[in-house]
Length: 451
Ligand SMILES: *Cc1c(COP(=O)(O)O)cnc(C)c1O
Image (cartoon, rainbow, N blue to C red; front, side, top):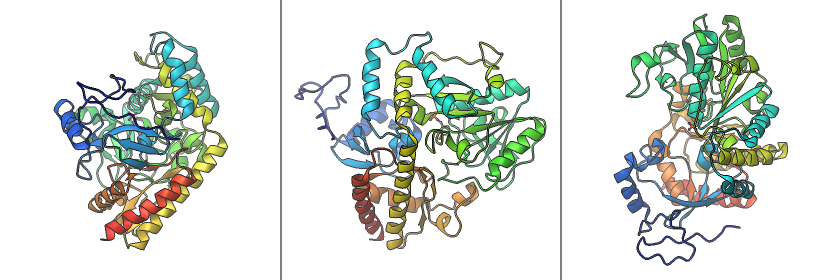
């Protein structure tokens, strides 16, 4: 049952009995646009993660006041069926009772100590016991920290410099991995953003996804999203991941799976279990924090021993293994039984078919690929013919059409990510009732598009 939203107070004269000043927006006005405008004065672009700013779809963001299960509410009281779900981090749905209870129980004992705790051991055990390749696990604070640590670890362990990544894969805001590729062939990376000097990507090679590149003994590691979920959802083609394993073994390079999205989303063992390929290192984030900031690197014991304090590759973090994040993460992993994954996969298929039917009914070219519990979306030319297998295919997306669809959905009370290349996320909150309601909203949104 959804609780009644707490009304927003006026900073000077709050009339809400339930108001908690530190939780209150205290904005004096309840309008998305006025709050956003006020945010832009103190936060660059008004956002702390750039995609949230609606630049790709136009307009200005809804400002979230609260969320529950499959729904988010904005500060004006509008409710949306949420398919963003913190970009997949809250697989149990928003404010799941198991997570909120864990956080309530944890907070009074203190929220960070600078000393080891039993709970970080338990979360590492929980990950290690489910993901066979992760004999040991180091916890940290974000997926970005996980990928940057994996790069340092791989270079330190092999004594080599080169890193191979794939065009259209995303590994967070790590300089060495923010490299742009050429078209269709493996190339030395160019800086993918201002602020990354040539030198930072001088040892980064960008290859097309779903083609096994030929490596040599200068390569420290190949880093890959085993199911690409940041260029729409693109499954690995038959033999791709196995081919990477073989090619890495041939030249003594490490294979690193970036499972920040797929880890504990596709199933308890992630993409590596689904495709039966054992990486040397795995990066995690999102789901393992139950909606709190977290990241992790797991892998072979001998490699993990390369990390300080045992080995020579430095890693440390003030909040790493944080009590709140590990409590939320453990609570989340506890709920994720095999039955839950079966149910989520069924919901993913249902979401895909309702979206496909609605778009087909109004002649909008769209495809919604499903990989296990993950749903992707391609509109425009990317949706004509076979499903995209690489970034060149995915980029045929009609971004203007996506923007129209996005706003039609938002008007009908459905929140998609404000970017054409994000996955659609279902979780424990998207039950039959929600999906039934969603189907009607999607249908009405499609009709808006037609008009
Ligand atoms: C989200 C994501 C990251 C970055 O994680 P953050 O916690 O946002 O730093 C890295 N890799 C992949 C595949 C991701 O989807």
